[in-house]
Amino acid sequence: MAESSRKKQGKVCRDCHRVVDGEACTVCGTANVSEDWAGYLVIIDPEHSDVAKKMNISLPGRYALKVR
Ligand SMILES: [Zn+2]
Image (tube, rainbow, N blue to C red):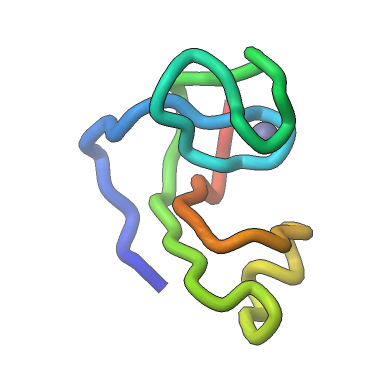
């Protein structure tokens, strides 16, 4: 699990907590994104990750633990 970082690394989808590159989440298809988030998290193998299961993450990728 990656350490949290104060440095902003983009926007995060409020629905699935995925870090998005643009203005919308490619997974949810929503523009419901936030720049105010904390706790950078990289999920490589969601099927074997307890954190991914807790957060209902099914796709590998970059996520945020907390989104406001
Ligand atoms: Zn999403």
